[in-house]
Length: 315
Image (spheres, rainbow, N blue to C red):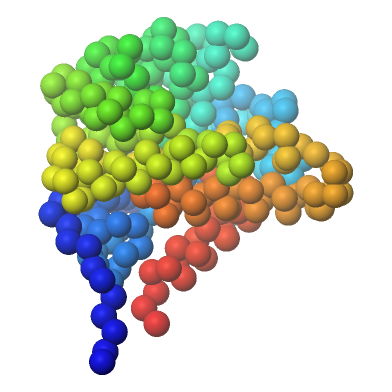
């Protein structure tokens, strides 16, 4: 008797979203089955990785994370170009660290000019990520949206408290929105509804469920992402049928394990430890349903790309 693998019946489909403009746009989403369940449905667009760039020079990065970007960390444009030219970046994620009110507190006009310089210098999709401070993000991201009109930036995090102001700017200046909520499927759905009611097109919306590093509560993020995919694919919940983006770089590289010296606490080589923590975190979230990952270390990215190829190659 021939064994047949039991198959789940899917009634829904993840929406497709096109990021960026020009010849190097990227389309994500479109899945008709759970992540990498190619025996049950289709995964027409493989998950994409955005390489992280900061708008100011990092002061507290682990040595292993700084090493690949020596000489460019004080220039976001040069940094972004290095990611593309040396490491084959498919997307760039510009983290607006300098706008943090508890840090440099850089103003909206100055920040918008930096973003525009990066956007003008690259031809791949650009993610622009604020600090999570609603008042400052509203001020900064609205100005960024205006200055970069028509470039289809991917702007976030957009939260319930600032969704009207940032969302309206994204609509008016033709950008994509990252709907960010704190590890809760009901809050994620609610924010998607609010943005839809505001007028954000379905094809211009990504879900950020908020994630963490492996070893730091990632099981909660995994569970929420898994439930979002289940609702979208098997329960016909149209408000949860959006691609998912995970900003993992900062979460992984702020953990104490990546800052411990070689063999401290018998944990082995520090560089290898950090790379593996980022790669393992990325793979866990890919298996939960991530469509876009924001990552930092080129070697971790290489490992994840190899695993994606392995999981999607027909034997």
